[in-house]
Amino acid sequence: MLTKYDEFLCHQMVSTFDHPKTSARQWTERVILHTHDAEGKLHMSNGFGIYPNRNIIDAFACCTIEGKIQYNVRASRELRTRPDEVAVGPFSYEIIESLKKVRNCLAENEYDLSYDLVFNGTMPPHEEDIQFFRVRGHVEEHALRYDQVGRAGGWIKAGGQTYELNESEYYVERDHSWGLRRDGVPETGIQPGAIPEGYLYSWAMMQFPSFGAVYHIRELWDGEQILSSGGFSIHTQAIKKNDEYLKLSTISSLNPAGER
Image (cartoon, helix red, strand yellow):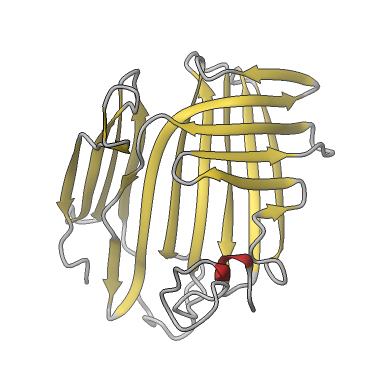
C-alpha cells in the first residue's frame, strides 16, 4: 500500500515503503532513547519497535525516580493500515529535523506517567559497522545501527509531580537500528537440534561536555570476537566545516566473516 514515504524519491526496491526487502519474520526497526540528569535522580528509557512482517508496532516507557519508584507504560497495535504513523495509543514520535531533533510524547493515561520531550542532538550520529552473523547456513543477524548523544528539553510527569527538563541539565543517548535481528522464537525447521551457544554483548554510549563516544563488542562463548566497533564525535559547537558536522574519528572494525 502507498504511504506518505512513497512520495519521496528515494526508493531502493520495486515495492512500496511498507514492505522490507525480505519477508523474514525477524525484520525489525527500533528507536530507543535514554533521558537522565547527571546526578541519577531521574532516568527514563522509551522507544518504539516496528515489525512489518508481523504487522505489529509497539512502544514502551520506563521512568525511575531517585532509584526508588519505577513507572512503566507499554502499548502495541496492528501496524496496518497506518504503517507510516509512529504512534501507538498514547505514544507518538515526530522527526523535527533529520539526524538532529526529534519529539517523543506520552499523553495522559491511567499509569501515572506522561511526557513531552524534544531530543536535540549536540553531536553528529555515529554509524556502527554492520552486524552480520550466520549459523549453519542460516542468517541469524544482519542489522545496522547509528547512535547519537544530545540534550533533552520538555517535561515529564510521574506520580503527580511534573519535572521540567532543560538542556543544561538533562542528557539523552539514543540509537536507531533496523534489519534482521536475533529472535527469541526459533523458526520451524531451522537448525534442528542445535544447542544454543553462550554470547557476549557489550554496548555503551557516553557523552561529555565537548565530545561523545560509543563502543560495541560481540564475542562468542569461546572468546571469538565477531564485532568490534566504536567512535568519537565532537560537540557541534566546538567544530564545524562547511556547515556540516565533522566527525573526530572512528574506531573500526574487527568484523570477521561472522559465520559458524
